[in-house]
Image (tube, rainbow, N blue to C red; front, top):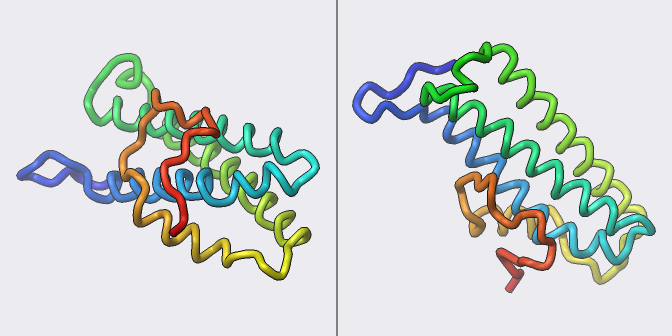
Length: 147
């Protein structure tokens, strides 16, 4: 784990990690999930599973923040245990996304947008912070729409 910044007490590398995960997951939710829900036979269930996994990822990242802040019960857990949870949730989230992207490629159409480019664009516009109690579970809440 990186040492905190001496002046601010923050952990820049951890905060950048949190921000990157949060932005990417939010971008996938608003760009890829709506299309997957419609095009894939089990799209609604897969979209729901992805959103639920982002919630679990947010909770795992919350444990890191709690441990950094010395809050109980995270302060009683070992760093190895906390980072193992983060690794497990991140692996699961990536696996769900990759399978969905692969299956979306299988049902692609000529008029499809470049999904990767739309996700990159959305990442620059969605919120940077994790929101473990936010309504990310509601797929009808759109944080971003392509222009």
